[in-house]
Image (cartoon, rainbow, N blue to C red):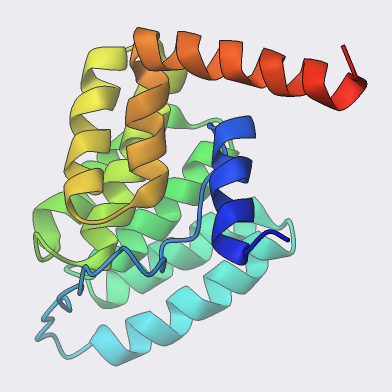
Length: 179
């Protein structure tokens, strides 16, 4: 009989590029909050939540506009920049996404969840653009903050680990099919 941990380990072996939960028992990272002292911050957060709902319902252009409104209310809210970057990325506006991620990283607490998410998102963009060196650098920063997804991406960027994962997946596939 396998335990939940056993199944999680096996899943990571068979699906090395899939993200894992960020709240595993081995992850003791405690994120610090972004300290934002701005009169429009609370209103910005409310508008940002509306924008997230729009994005999740597929209304990405409207979400981008709403995130812009949230940023206008509080131009030092790193989360709004990080979330708008996600919407830009979904719209194929990669340079705008990178610009917003850079701004989110500039504004956020270096040990905040926003910082971790921005590094993961920017690294993913770099990886899609074929810039594995920059991707590796940002994934390492996110991994240092506790992102298990970033840790898995670092392994995937390691050609030796990728080769071992591929061979192991082939072995498991042969076992599953009885070969």
